[in-house]
Length: 279
Length: 266
Ligand SMILES: Nc1ncnc2c1ncn2[C@@H]1O[C@H](COP(=O)(O)OP(=O)(O)O)[C@@H](O)[C@H]1O
Ligand SMILES: [Mg+2]
Image (tube, rainbow over all chains, first blue to last red; front, side):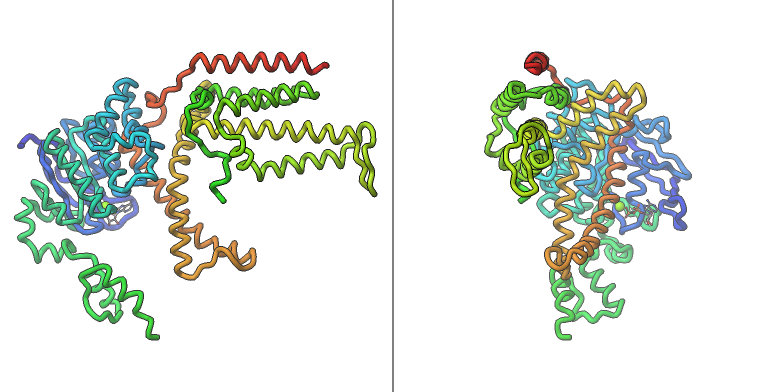
């Protein structure tokens, strides 16, 4: 549990033509086989960090080591084989016209032989429980199923690490569970290292370790229990507060007269659309 | 209404035609377009017509379905027919009413040309009806593969085609959603003057474009993350298999054109 899979040292990144720094002197290690959750409010730099780990951009300062490779333009393709990514939007990462074509996409890119490819596509779909959908087209799949196909596409390349960037945030509760169960199984049975980026604290609670990012800096890290004890502090970081509560607060601040602060999205929505009926 | 249009639709089945290599079908169609023009008399048209119906029969696509789906195009065929009947001045006069004179040559020419048109439409719709679009793309990529030597981006074009095919249903769904959203805000797409209706489409198109660009950007990132680095050194998951029946189809085509050549001069 203590072999280092990824080592990030003093990494900073600034998007071109942006004033604020997206990542500011971040250092952390990821251990082989662990499940690491990265949490933080919107814009805290989670996706920027994720993309960096996959060489989609390079640190302006600092170094990243992944599976023994230093992250640079030379090693980037080898690193992409070691670390697979699943993105937020299930539709916008589905490249193939059918499930099996999509799983094969990464294999094709890496020049895997045809016979091997067929085996791996099937085996990967088996691991995510999607073999019954081999020839299905994406628009006939649910969000959760699409994300499981995306996971199959990643594990077909036999990576050591899988990184999920809010991969469940666009799914319904059932789809969420489906995807999380799949990932848990891969983590436990195959020893896959999991980095799960989320702003759902419930999801983060399942991790071995949690890292909190804030304004591009590493705010704190610890076990889920440690982190949740920070209760009040988390609220200040914009974490853990349900969306409806935040929204009600913002609307009230903006001068809208709401009858109460809503804890439930549905209530908020119905108040909002009936708000002007008396006029 | 959309369900009735068959052009570009695929009908799964296990017929001989369905099982053919898409390259064979594409080559067949390219050749057929030329061969149709060899027909010039009753014998040759009868032969090529019989041949077309043989293919329709082999494809197991129901003729009624085919004709039903081609109705809008059939109108065009009919229009072509009458154009020739009214404006060709060849051969004996058949009838004459008022300014309109109908010649025998015009009727014959009308029948031949609309028949030719019809046969071409039948055969090309059969291609899409019996071949999944992705296979058509694979076939095109493979057939045009040699053009890579002269720097034609064949792989990229084929990938673009297959991604477009993959996103058509997604974008249609999205259009539907935006339309409902705009209707909920009082937009009206189905009544009013033409100019009003066109104006109503703008708030539909703009969000659609914005989201399509966003999708494209995310897709590009996802593709790169999954190791896509162009066609170089890439293997293919879908493999095209040329079999005996594809060779047979080609031989058949040669025999047909030879027969047409001979019958032409009768
Ligand atoms: N493509 C981009 N170009 C410029 N700025 C960006 C881009 N993507 C993100 N940012 C900025 O970088 C910061 C971190 O964003 P991001 O990593 O996407 O946050 P998160 O994923 O935690 O919501 C934000 O301030 C955001 O506005
Ligand atoms: Mg993000």
